Image 1 (cartoon, rainbow, N blue to C red):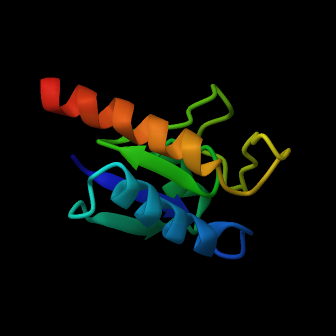
Image 2 (cartoon, rainbow, N blue to C red):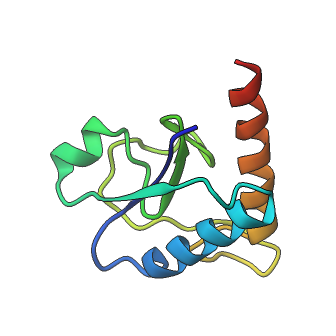
Length: 108
């Protein structure tokens, strides 16, 4: 399972996303799973990765929170959470998305 975090410089939430992703992986029993942080710094890179905004959490190339938003946008992302819009997803939502992708990856 390949886990990636895509960020753009200057977006709020980029640093918090790294900590949040590590915690979520640890919490669901994937403490040994590494992840790569990629900096998206051009419209070309955003388009090539079908980037929907920073931060983006990907597993095996799939955005865990794909929403049908404009892909290829060099922009900051906002996530709906129980506490209102935030720059990172809710920890519980991230755990759930990671568990679902991990289950799919082990069946495939």
